[in-house]
Length: 477
Image (cartoon, rainbow, N blue to C red; front, top):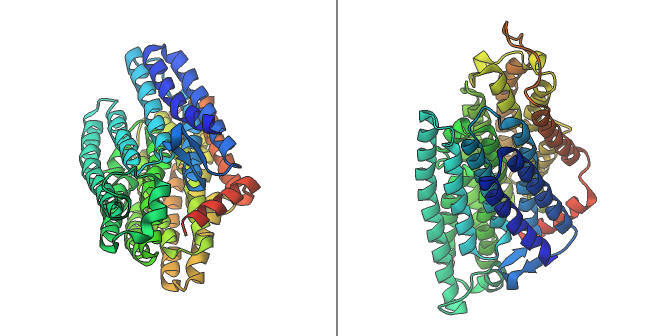
């Protein structure tokens, strides 16, 4: 199985190099092939246990497999969307740069759960920042450049804090492991019970603040709405469906080590505070949005808050719900952004007031966009309904009745806001003069793939996936 890790670590990078020097047509095909190979490789790992390669520099356990699955699925679905999204009227140079950056971005996100070192994890997340900021600005508009600059500035400050968290935790390990050691995850977990408690607490706070910036936790989320709104649609899908999950993965590694060192109470309190703030503000701000992609961006803030709250409950069923939520959110948010991009392309606007009647002019994309938003709203039979049900049940089992009730209220508010705006976009009468017809069959197919995954996660997740989630939840306790 070690060879699979090498494939995962090289195929997207090789694809980026090929796309940089090949024709755009070949680049799109290579991108789709890379996404399919990456996803197939991750599926191969699901039934296996811990896998290592390169003398332990690459390592995948159940927890990292869950996040690899989220990244790989969004990569595949977005690569399918790209086949219809990349238009021939764009310059050949622009298309080559976009496809190369797209694959490089995916490679960095794949590498983050693969590497067996907190330092290398930080490097991988830092690479995602540089590459994704360039992709946000690639269209060359003033608004895109401003969003990219804001993203780069805020994310760099956050990653500076994350680097400090890594240094503090490494320093805590020197009291046990000596002045120089490899900060691999298994080594830190084995030795964590002997780490100084104060240093561990400080590292957790810094990690949640630092990586929470990339995850979109309130109050360090302010880059997210602008970047998601101005980025090309495939980049928005990767940012929301995959990058936020990767950043959460980094936080969970620090949380996992802190549980071994000082118990779960401190980490739970930190995550609960950030989670409630993110869920609350995200749900409330949804009601005031008039830009379709910003609406979906604030939905991401809300869902990231749900992940933090679910982790803070610390009940086994809540932790399984959190990990399932990572996968379901990746499928739902990627699909929703695909729909938003198609609708935006058809109407030539991101203003919700100008986008009406999508179901009549986009007979496939319109209904599927509505279904994706219903999935994001935690309605059955979609995966987020199952995951949030598990999270709320976990809160009730641990005696966090007040927080669980607050979660239900805020999720209901978010559902009302999303349903109101998207309902108008999809179901109202279309403006006169808008031609009926899909922008691309490939773009519609990518949405169908995402919705299919979302239904499977909600109705009956495969047994192998259920076992994987259970193993990953056990690793976090």
